[in-house]
Amino acid sequence: MKPLQRFAMLIAALLSCPSILVSEAKSAEWLFVHTSNSAEMIRDNTLVMPVTRDIFAFTGRPNRLHGYLNANEFVSMWRGKGDTFRGDPPNAVLTWVIRMSIKEAEVVVANAIVSDDGRSISYEVVFERGDFLQSNMDGVSLFIDGFIPPPNY
Image 1 (cartoon, rainbow, N blue to C red):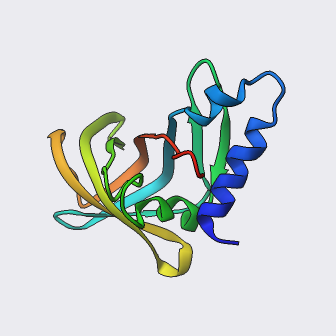
Image 2 (cartoon, one colour):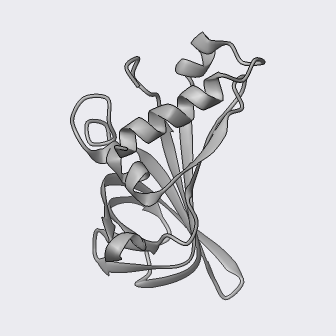
Image 3 (cartoon, helix red, strand yellow):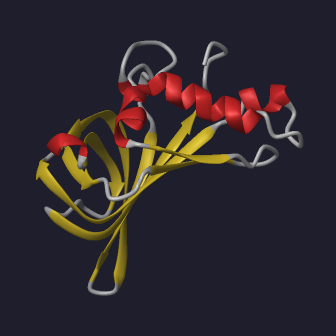
């Protein structure tokens, strides 16, 4: 099954919850969180994060939906044109820990690809502001801005 189809099935399954109005759920903005024990900046604009758990996806009120995407499903949102992250790269906040201090940087995620045989995601990031990205980071979370699925999802 194609990654976008699985994401569509996730949304369809979540839409079947009787307490959610279908029209509201279809227009829900999905937010994403990729967490990892570590991450590495291998170039000025390439962040590599291991995928030790699936990417968490959720919506805010009134929908309050949630689910998980594997690396391939998540990265598929940067493929194609139009209503994808490739057509409108998302903003994100990257947080990490250095000596008991939390650091954070705002970035734009221009692209993402699965690497290391599915065990990592390589993000092409554009630094916007905040703490400077370190070559090696621990306790990493990448909070990725919203995605509203088009009607044919």
